[in-house]
Image 1 (spheres, helix red, strand yellow):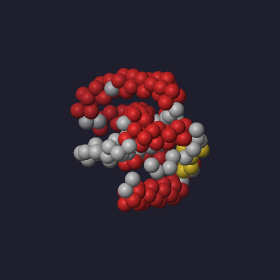
Image 2 (tube, helix red, strand yellow; image 1 turned 90 degrees about the horizontal axis):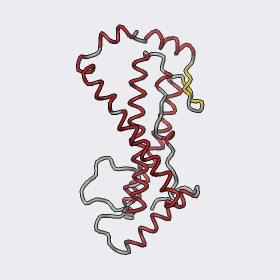
Image 3 (cartoon, helix red, strand yellow; image 1 turned 90 degrees about the vertical axis):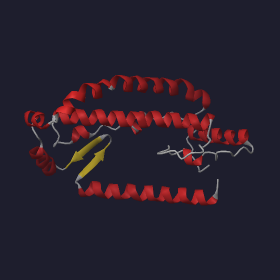
Image 4 (tube, one colour; image 1 turned 180 degrees about the vertical axis):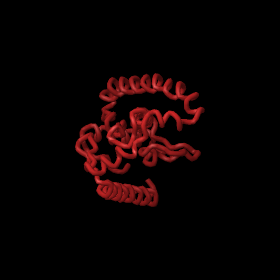
Length: 203
């Protein structure tokens, strides 16, 4: 990989770490802590949140008509989303051990914690949890696909890809044909090392 590209990627990693630290500081200021999968607010803040909650009857009066009209379509998407979830889970369960690729953990991508927010009513919590599931599940499926791409075809595109997955920047440049199959084997070795519990180094 070009040294300048590696340097930029290292800078991005450093900025991501800095962002995590800032987010943790903000958590402290908002008076909540995370215990396992649960989010715990201080009691005084939780009481204040309950006072801000909009009751369901008043909430229905504020909903825009177009939201009611499109709601069956939005929630109808739960069926293909769940089917995709099932399919990619079965795929990685069957195929990843064969390829020696580490399995992707759903819980790392599908985070459901909006139900702990006392200022949301029951319907708002359901909406938020549905959105969280959809976004998280697609990220989960994307990572499964990214690991598969790294195994079979770790080659970048000639055209710019918007919002590429995290592994993409380490892939081979478009048109880099020298020692292609040896380089692909190196990518597969990196996946095998991840599967064996080793930290993935920059390729």
